[in-house]
Image (tube, rainbow, N blue to C red):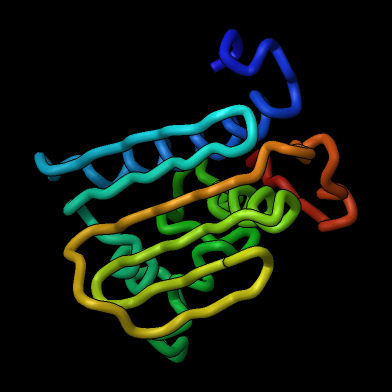
Length: 167
């Protein structure tokens, strides 16, 4: 990736940030899955990353840890909320998909999540959510423009009041 993008640090930072967060979620939740795929394709102007698994779905994992009063059609939206994790009582802080979503919005890209009959879409900063055809695990799709990339260093995440509990 670094050699293809000629060591353009902003492009590689954006790609590695999104790719690593998606892989970490995939690694954690697709452990019982034998039918998974992660692919990426791109050129100098854009990158696309897609991951599909039939493991423990994002929807079920979050349904098990969120307040039972939360409506099902908002659960995937919660997955991109800062501090929401499907892995409580671990060292996971719930910033992974939030960071991906922030990068997608900043770079005028697309983030699509599909899990167990529900979807969340961020298309160029416009959000849609609701019911979808049933998929037993999770599908994540990211499409980012790299024409004028904005990396994590460009985002004002400090004013987002990130609080880290080191206990």
